[in-house]
Length: 113
Image (cartoon, rainbow, N blue to C red; front, side):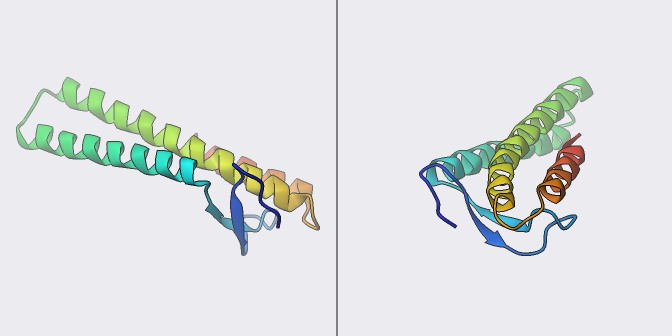
């Protein structure tokens, strides 16, 4: 598959529902760095919550931090899903079933909800 600047490259293997066969997406360097940065920030937030629990901090503060972690993981998931969807769509333009690709992407989106 030809990869243009900013596009994800793919490693093909069996997909969720037989549509998209992309499982591994090789993210562009800039996107990979952003993803890693987000994950490190989430890791730091999780460690902060652990300290809050150890120090028996107020439950409302802990819940607030957990909500922030949830929002951050959701945002990171959307970033990855965006690039995965592009790779799947590019894959569907070949011999793959467009309907199967859409079903696969919808299934992934529902996992996030």
